[in-house]
Image 1 (tube, rainbow, N blue to C red):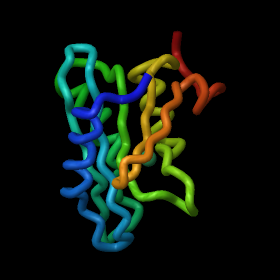
Image 2: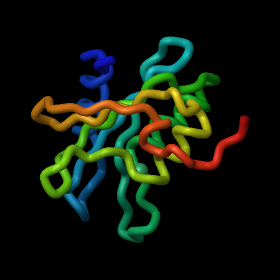
Image 3: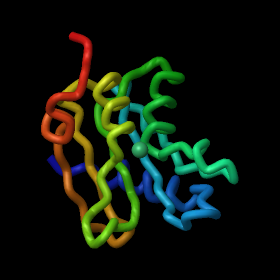
Image 4: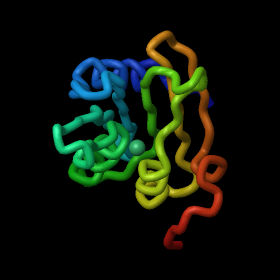
Length: 130
Ligand SMILES: [Zn+2]
């Protein structure tokens, strides 16, 4: 199932707001919650580099703050070594915890290319409850 355009557009808009003065690798994310709400997150870096937070986790955490759970996750980022950039392992683990193995993840480029996969495929043996 392709991610809908509104969710990708929300992630792309969040990407424009990313704070990435060190890497210049701007990333934005959006989740659609089980309540139908679209929430976004942006990469935030820090001069103390270990404090950076991925856009995806920011969006996933926002779903908890909204009293909901993510049903869909979209990331918009530049390619990495020519490949569409998928969420990192830490973000996949958080998505698995909150959305379960059927949550579908779409990664898109600013140019509009995209790939989708479920967490079951992306993190098949990630630890989870239930
Ligand atoms: Zn990440």
